[in-house]
Length: 165
Image 1 (cartoon, one colour):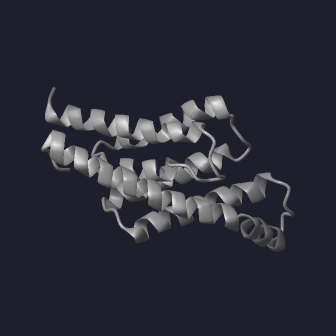
Image 2: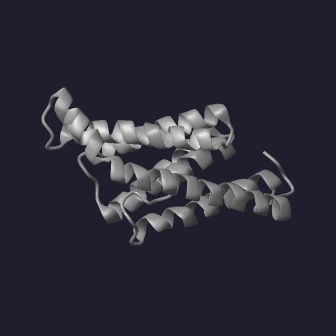
């Protein structure tokens, strides 16, 4: 198998294992999907594959978990995170937190728009305020899973692929 194909296979397997964590019980918003979107954007040079892997993982897991009224906003947030990550091609705490913020802003705007909050500035502020505990979990999960994906794959790359991106 060519080194490039091995790399794509390892990345796909690594991301898939991380995505399975979405299906097991976990604290609210403590999931690896944002980290997977960042990882795909940074590590995959083929932009179509970079979008396809995280979005496919979301679609497949949503078939089991269920789709929600804000699913469109969730997918949009991940598309923007993949786009941003594929543009910067760099892991940093700043970029991971910025991705968390992108997810928070877009998805909670969707909650406000589609949910039971008043359609006013006060309702929007209330929606974002009520989401802060979930945002804390998101940031911690994004940092944790990004570190695992990045450093774990770096070790696989060094030991088995001998191919740097």
